[in-house]
Image (cartoon, rainbow, N blue to C red):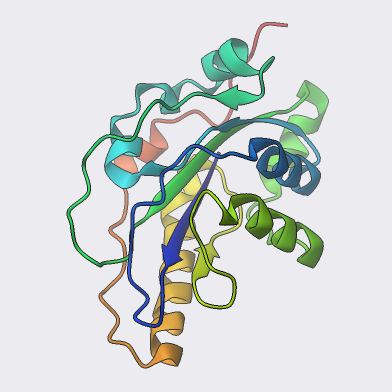
Length: 197
């Protein structure tokens, strides 16, 4: 599963690198588990779009669950230096695996994208504010609801519309939307895999 997000800094809504390791990953994990009503294993930082495309384990959710479900955290390693030095907004992908019991899987897959409740929204924002270096009331965190990776382009489109609206309200020229992911890559990721007990 995935959550596309971006941080807009200052009055000019600039982009900066916000791919630091979560210093409060339990809060992020707790929000996702409460929202999805399932146990989750979460990446320890967000990935850039390039990092996500190159991440080999994205197509192996069962293996990820088997390797990291005990710790509850997927180590992503240090950020790859793949970002241009400019002030454009940056797309981040928070990757995670939902550990769904067999009888609950069908209902879980039918749920689709659902936005966080107000309490979970505030908890999530507080959980990532420090590591993203966000100043409350000055910087903005925009994100799509969690989605299955196959729906990542729809979630990114949702994020693009939020970002365009933020730029419009701030009176700052919109730099354009984030690029879509290759549909062939998204469709190759299984919606579920068996994880050994």
